[in-house]
Image 1 (spheres, rainbow, N blue to C red):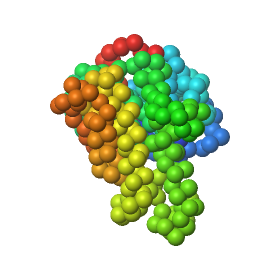
Image 2 (tube, one colour):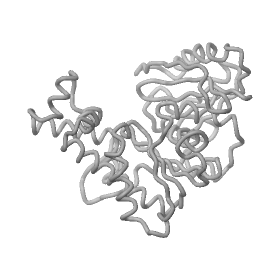
Image 3 (cartoon, rainbow, N blue to C red):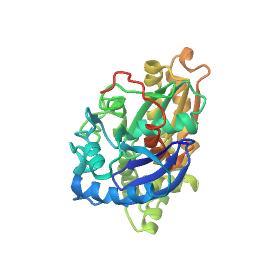
Amino acid sequence: MRYAIGVDIGGGSTKLGLVSQDGKILASSRLGALPDETGDDFVQRLSVEIASLAGTGCKVAGIGIGYPGPIHPGNLSGGIGNVPGLIDFPLAATLTAATGLPVRLENDATAAALAEARFGAGNGSTRLLMVTAGTGIGVAMVIGGAAMVTSGGCLGDTGHLIVDGHLDRRCRLGCVGCLEAFASAEALDDLAEAEALRHPDGAIAVDASRMGGKADTSTLIRCALDGDATAQATLSDAGKWIGRAVASWIHTFAPDAVVIGGGVMAVGDFLLAPLEAEARRCAMQSYTTGLRFAAASLGNDAGVIGAAVQFFEPALDMGRY
């Protein structure tokens, strides 16, 4: 049995796990984010946690990292990411020097897709398209168990596919009319807060007040699950936007399965059902016949497991970087 350390770096926290070759997390840890932390300081904290996980008696093959952004050749973190101290920081080389273990980087959405393809909802698929709807929207394609990579260690910035350029809505990176501007958690945060301000006695405003903060995506999810029609409609609209983008990706990549994950999927069929319906409505029938849609099944563990998968199978180079 082979073992690896999986690391899933996020803007709010970094999750780590000792992962076995059969996809089980045997031990886990978490680091809280420090906004002003340098790359060197992050590696120092991370090394302590890795040493603890690697000291459990299992022979560790290496450290796989899921990074929240594009990746430069040579395993440098990319120029865009939500962890400022790691931008253009030589993470792999520095972590190897600190731990003595080989380190591989993968885009975080790609890592989650690798996990779902091998151990989760995409198991049995030959051509898996995975969409991760969270703070941003990540897209990954796994073919025959290996990630398809076009640039930046992933499918480029596929989540910024332009879905409606007529509406002057920008994502946080400045794209006009891209999918993230309409259906990411950041976009839904704005819609939730606007709805709370318009209707201060409505369910969304009341829920936000009860939780002691501003209305956001979590507010929408709670209210939708509690039966609020406005929250359900808002999340359904997000599902439709993603579904339209999925139709384009179906035509581009010809998947046999589409798996939807990320924090927004906590609302379940209120997002997935309109998403699938819209994708099927917009796409050519020849591409959707036999196509399977499913919710991701590994939850928050997908990033850690998928990062570790890099040490369990040889990667196929499909135009990497």
